[in-house]
Length: 249
Ligand code: PEP
Image (cartoon, rainbow, N blue to C red; front, side, top):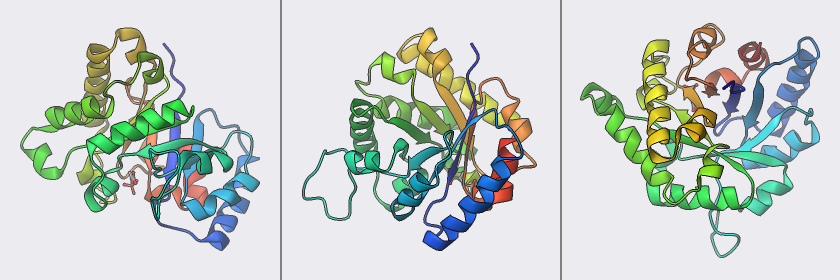
């Protein structure tokens, strides 16, 4: 089946209001020059979400980079899904390697967040990926299957069809070192087969699997030409209006 490709810019902890407004002004001008055939969006920091909402063109997906799994409560410094929904957030990145690495994000909380997001009709972008050491020791498949299995514990098949999975080898994030299209395709295919084992073939054919790790305008075409790669999660190259736009055309 034909899966629509989805490209999401992950802005991490970059851009204040002024910088975001500049980006949106420029990007919206560029959007008028060509028709975009992919789904696309930006995962901005929480303070920039109102601006994205105000400047939203109809197609822009507004995404967040994290959320809490509880509805509300005494969780200083956290943000609820209800608060994100006020900002027209439709997708949330969950389990990014930087959150796993620096903020103790573990598979169990990732699983709870996925349950809460699906209950709220928000699409999670579930990140998985191996470290350089694991890659060199040929542990990629084992590590990723384990991350996915734990993240998807007790998630229903009907939700999996809506899910976006981002395969992001940690050794390729922000390093300029990109996995070859063939390497990325091999892992994305393995992920699809694993979803088929966990659920069924029909669901596996619907889940969208992105590649992430130093994707740039000059290498995205090759990556997207692979049959099991349904888009990209992009950090650095999504920060500049022209470069983000070039990823989409
Ligand atoms: C990311 O932040 O998910 C990412 C892939 O970053 P970069 O494109 O900069 O490697």
